[in-house]
Image (cartoon, rainbow over all chains, first blue to last red; front, side, top):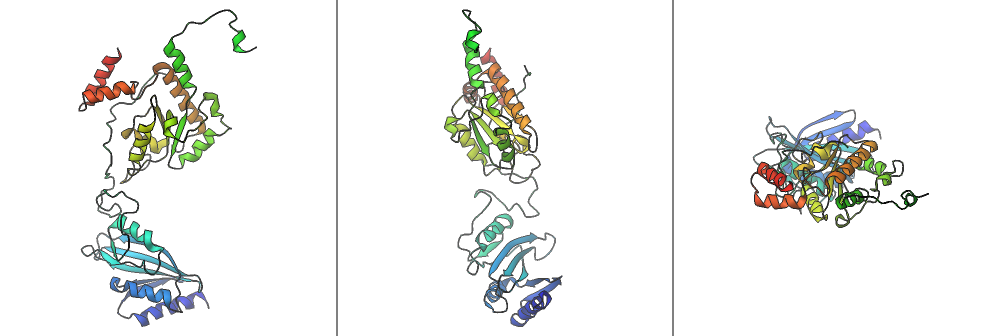
Length: 174
Length: 189
């Protein structure tokens, strides 16, 4: 089975199974990307994991992109790999700013736990039904989401009162 | 022919402060607060190639309660800042702080949502080491500078002022730092 054939099969497979949920796809040198409806993300992931022709045992990565000038604004990006069938797939789902949530896939791959928490921490995207959705990297009292494009690039939120550094020690070398 | 035979029946005159500071500067017990890549360079500096024990600073203490020299080695984030402050507070007086490398000194090339722009915003710093990361020679240079300072000024905390006096002056005028400094300078005279 060549790589290109298996990639083609994956596209066709998802189009057959979820004809209404596929919003777009492309294929770059055998690496395939499928844009799907966020409401179907859990069903599609379930299919990708369980189907004999997909067998995505491994959740490689989850992250998000902030396209601040587009609507819907955010895009959650998933990467999956099948160890037994040796193919991989990139899945994307757009998430609007005013209704900023998507279903958690923690029930399928427990490895996604911290990825979803990091994504929530940095972009403010809520993963519904995640068992422990709280900030992963930033501290709890941090306000806002630092990787959003409208977060000021050098805005800081200190936890301690910062000292005034008005003069640094100066002395002559003996 | 040890040093004991050099003086024979003679004697030396010195000040108690001078002797105490002399002994302090050659028995620095460092606490390495290592958070980033500068740590590798700290390890190089602390190993036998550079023989840091020439300066009496070769024994790292992994409890702040047994240390008098705090090496802050690497990037300090706002998340980490309360930990650093607590470690500093746990060290017994007299104590000194070295900012090791660009990140600890000024935030380095990070100016974003997470990184403290220099650890002197959290704790008073005695010596800054430039470099990203610094060469071990720069570390030894900083230790020598710190030793000179200890010899000259004794147990200093901030801008050559005794930390206990500093605390007292801060209590007296917690509002105006300039006023604090003037009071401290007066109290030293």
